[in-house]
Length: 212
View (cartoon, rainbow, N blue to C red):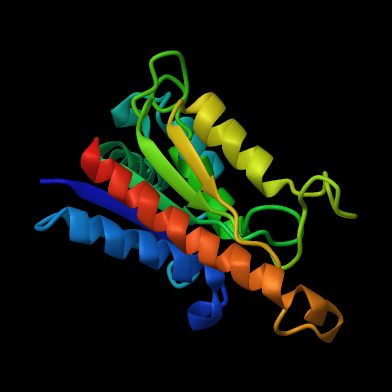
C-alpha cells in the first residue's frame, strides 16, 4: 500500500498558500492512489522539540547507560526518522519566514538528520521523491531587488537533495502578499499566475508519482 508523508509548517492556517498547495498535491496523490495512506504532521499545531543534547548523544551510548531523558529523546528521533524512511513520497509546506525556513521545520529536520543513516553515502532515503512548496510573500527571483536573499530553498536543497540524496522538486508560489499589501497591488496578476502555476505543478508532480 502506497504511503504519503504530508508535512505543513505554516502558521497562517486556512490563509496559508503553502498549505493550500500541499493540499492540492495530497488530493491529487490520493486520487492516483486509491486505498493509499497519508501520514500527516502539522508542525505549527504540534511542533516537535528542538534537538537536545540528550537526543544528540543518546545513540552513541550503550542502551543500559542511557538516562530516561536520553531514551525518550532517542525514541522521538527514531519515530520521526522511521516515518520519513517508510513513506513512499513526501510533500512539505515550507513558507519563507524572515528569509529562511520556519523554526518548526528546522527543528523537525534536525531530528531526522542522522549520520550513517539518512546522512551519508548510503542514505536510507536516497531517491525518495520529495516535493517542497516554498511560498513567499514577495519575489526573490533573479533580477528582482531581493534576489539572493532567499535562504530557504538553498538550505532545503542542501539538506534534502545534496545530503539526503532525495529526488527533490520545489514548487515556488511567489507574491502571496499581493492582495493584502496595497503597495503590491500592481503585482496581483503576477501573484495569481504564480499561485495557479503552483497548483498545476502540484497536481502534475503527484500524478507523475502514480505513473512511475
